[in-house]
Image 1 (cartoon, rainbow, N blue to C red):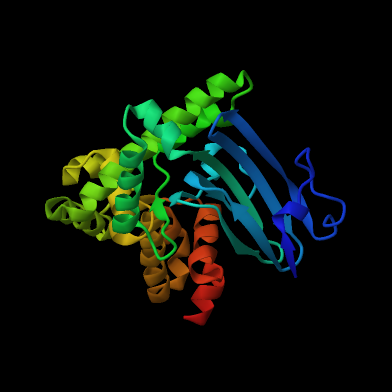
Image 2: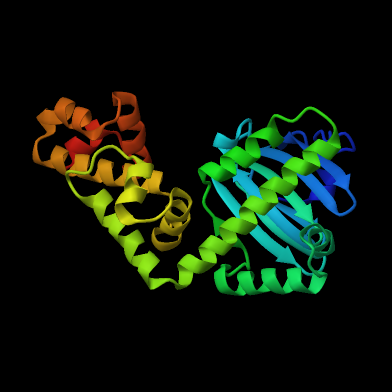
Length: 295
């Protein structure tokens, strides 16, 4: 089924009655200042849908979640994109899938005025970053770091005047611009990349303790922010996800050797039993008990 986003929400941000049999969710679009917008959008579908959407030109700073975004912890990825002109496209929502989006949109001219630069300088900067760091869809991916979470929390908790919300948005945008600079440097610095591979090797060592990012950063000679951004660049996933997968893979190897030793294997993994099972199912598609029977 294919529908247009214009047919999904009414003027209050509720799902329209005509599409309510298939969709649920909400949309809030705030025009905080001329050329500065904040979007909070959620969709849940009980059927496969292709949704057509139109996007105005501008700089987009997007935060995606797999379920309702109630706190910054619910965000799983950050994307930055520059759209030089209005575009129209489709995105797919599968049956029982949830799609959540927080998004700041600002014009290059508005950002230039804040930063004391020209509009051309801002556009050139983001075009350069897009060409250097973007994927096939010209979108730059950033991990969710501690700084990102700290910048997002006051926005999600905001209940006051729109001017103060605009201030929080500026702070968030500045944080992401700084992270772009770090990402650009890490993508070219061979010494930094050696340190990142060293971090990956340390996580893989059998004697590696439960994840302590601050200690890991000190060991390899990077600050925490650079380690988080660079690890995602080099490995393609967050340090937390990679460490979890590494520990579960190690536990799986031990289970194959001695299925009866599961209690001690769980204890050595650093997970609770519930966390252990959840991670096992996520990475192998079966419970640890089923895995032991298969292998």
